[in-house]
Image 1 (spheres, rainbow, N blue to C red):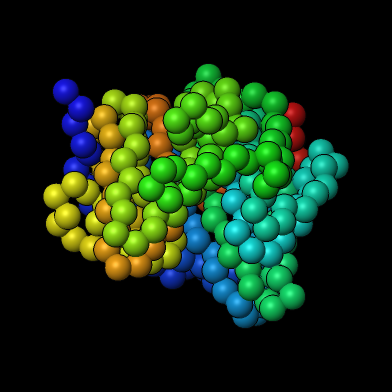
Image 2: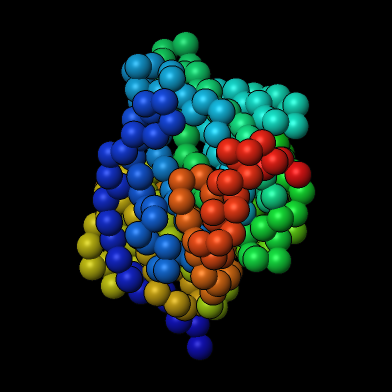
Length: 283
């Protein structure tokens, strides 16, 4: 029997300042770790005022995690300790596996109108892969399939699968699904999810019911965390809704986290910062 997931929690994203003074909205972070395993953080940076983002995220280290940057509008220039340089532009995704350690910078630049809008998701790595070699997957918008269902629902598939169409990001240990979904007015969208996986939605624009009981309309900049089940069901009313639908397999491992580094024990965490200070962080 197919069980539709019920909502565990709805929460509004909260203002935060990161990097060299980037103003953003945090959908979830440090205190939510047990509930969202294997995911650690989701930030929504959205502004048409360059003063809110132009200082960017200067050089900083990461170890033990993956950072997934999805740009809706604008550009993010990046560079790292391995000599990589690049530019993520509107519609692109960068899936960075920090692994054993990387030092990089990310510098946002808005559109000609000054609009910068994107998301950064952090996913944890299991203990067995925390010290693997760092790598990038630069996923350009032309490689991300967008399908339109019979009822007019549009789905961009970054990772995962919808009615036989697979996203370009594969072979990730947490078996993630990352969908950008737009549902027209007075329309329903149902999607199968893997039993036991953590599933959440983040409302980007508009509002909708995110459960089959139609208990509460969920507005933009709200996070919906689901209970376990086989599928999710979203229904719109008089206007469309756009949301990110993300899921992954929990790691069920201890988390030791400080700043941009996430390990399994406090000893590993201390070692990482000691190595960073002594110049032996990059392997």
